[in-house]
Image (cartoon, rainbow, N blue to C red):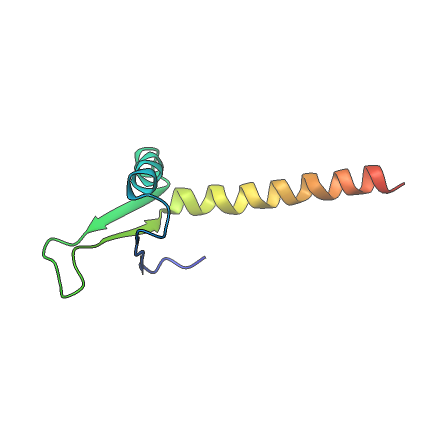
Length: 80
């Protein structure tokens, strides 16, 4: 999984800014995501940069692997 920062742009056509911020704040609060806010706006405005922390990456990798294993077990159980 990449640790590079990616710019997230939210427009009126996207999910509401308040909803997105609320969910990202929850992930930040539990240490799964970190946020770096730009101090000065550039020509495109003021941005925040988010990235998955090491803890978030570990949980994501393990969680996805576990979900896949459970799915395969269920497929095996019901395919007989």
